[in-house]
Length: 413
Image (tube, rainbow, N blue to C red; front, side, top):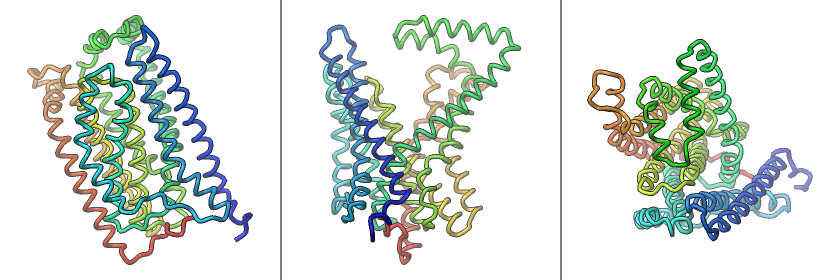
C-alpha cells in the first residue's frame, strides 16, 4: 500500500485532533503545575488553591497519557509500521489485583484528605488512581464477557470521548440552560416580588466573603423551597439525562460506516462512558473536600458505573438500529438508559437537599423530598448493585450471541 493511499481524511482528522488536544492538555498540565508549586511555597496562600492547581495539573497529565496511544499508532501507520497494541498481557488479571488494592488506597486517601499540609501534594495523584482502577476493571470485565478482540479502534474512541464529547456536551448544556434562564427572566419581568428577591440574592452572594459557611447560610432558605428543588430535579434528572445519553456515545457515530455488531456497539459505548465518567469525576475532585472526601469518592464510583453502563446500552442500541434496522429497540434502549440515569440523579440530588429540609412537614412536598432524601443512600446503593449485575449479564449475553461473528473492528488501521 502506498503512503498516499493511507493518508485519508479520517487519518488526518485523528492526527489533528490528537495533536491539538495533546498540546492543550500539556500546556494546562505544565502551567498549573508551575502556579501550584509557586503558591505552595508562597506565604499567605491558602492550601485549597494549591490543591486545586495541582489537581488540575495531574488530571491534565493523565489525560495527555490517554491520547498518546492513538497518536503513536496513527504516526506508525503513516510510516508503514505495525501499530502497537498498548494492552499488556493478562490485563484483566492486573486490573483485578489493582482493584483488590483499592481499599488500602482509599484508606490512605481518607487520611490525607484530613491533613491539609499533605493533601495538596499527595492526594491529587492518589484520587486519580481511585477513579481509574474501578473503571479499568469494569472495562476489562466487559471486554472479557463480550469475547471481544481488543483493537486500536478503542484508542480512537478514547480520544474522541476525551476531547470532542465533553466540548459538545458543555456547549449544548450551556445553550439549554441559557435558554431556560432567558425564559425564566422573561417570566420574572412581570413578577416584581420575584425580581426583588433575585436582586437581593445576587447582592448577598456577590458581597459574601469566601467562606463556605456564610454562603451556605445565604443559600439555605432557597434550598428549602419546593419550587427550587423541583426546578433542579427537572433539569438534572430530566433534561440532563436526555441530552447526555444522546451525546456521550458521540464517538460511535464515526464508526457507523463499519456496521458495528451489537456486541461492538456495546463495547465502544462502554469505553466512551468510562472516559466520560473519568473526566466528570476528576473535575469533581479538584477542590479540597475534607471530611466529605470519602462520600464524594464513593458517589463518583457509582456515577462512573452509571455512565459506563448507560453509554454501553445506547451504543448497543445504535449498532442494532444501524446494522440490523432495529430502530424500535434502539429507541427503547435509549429511553431505558435515560430512565436509569434520571433515577440516579434524582436520588443523588434529594440526598444532597435532605439536610436543608424539615422532615416533620410530611404532608407537604418539602416533607416528601426530605423523606425520599433519607432513603436515598439505600436506593443508590441498591441501584449500584443492580447496575453492576445488569452490566455483567448484558455483556455476557451479547458475548454469547455474537461469539461466532468476527468483529468488524479487528481490521482497524
